[in-house]
Image (cartoon, rainbow, N blue to C red; front, top):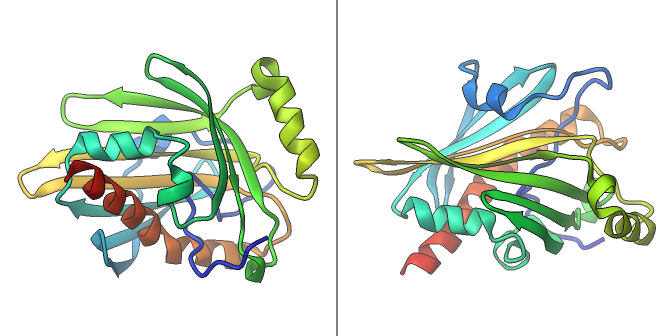
Length: 227
């Protein structure tokens, strides 16, 4: 595992929960009004990022929210460009692969090289992302699916090649973009049970601290693409 100073997590990541908790749905995550503001941090690319927490279906979830001077379509392009995360994300995405695209649905795989100082195992996930365009906002959200029914060979290749890495048993989240007169409102939300033995408090603290970097990474890349 690499030693990286920035542990922001893309697509979803450093939290913990009870083994008996249910899996939140994206509708629950996007529709809840129980977000509690934890902190506001300044990011070089995204400006002020508000970090929130909510408990949804027994899982501690986090949200990063910011305003940016980049268009919605550029941000959506970044969020759905699965392979490019290796280059633009500071989270440590080592491998990324689009498995299939079917209209607004994207099946994909990513491997996260977790910094050694966390004393936590690397992570990987096979997720199905969905693009949704509403009248006033656009989202790209993801969840787990029956990967072995569709991509059994690739799944076994990854699991066999990385026996110490962990596939989070719960991984629900998404990006939401809304155009306003002040710019684009960005929300990044994630609910995850990462598994492993890292204490819950350490995981939650890491997520709270690195969400601004996740948002900032996407803004920086979207700004580059739109210029």
